[in-house]
View (cartoon, rainbow, N blue to C red):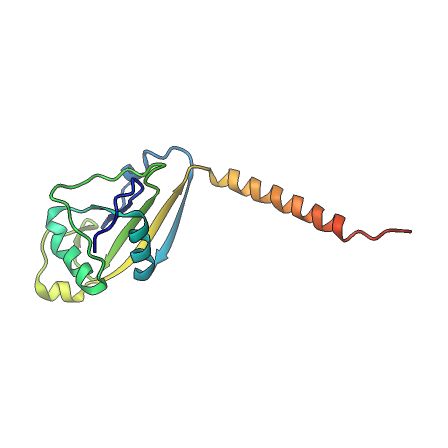
Length: 157
């Protein structure tokens, strides 16, 4: 499966770092667990940029074998920085593998790989701050309530 080059690709990584968010300024980040079917549709629509170390190739191959995502690891590590163009980040969460100081190891045995399970979390960046969105929502609700009250008014005539 070849994913398109759209200029708005979805970043994919095995980890999350504060440096990934430095390009967005003040805004709102939403987080949600997503399914593989959702990811396939997302990747078909926007394309993919993988940020994984070469030693994580076998781990990514395992994800591809299990879920059929056909994600290709780049020859060199691509650093991620979310922005207006690249608003989406999918983190592949790995469970059941040993870690050192919270980080995945460069190598695992076949038996360890058999214990690995995965889940997927999507982060989405909006350039508008949460407080601004809440204020706009409150104003819209107030306007709607006024409109409904006006339409349901009773005439004294």
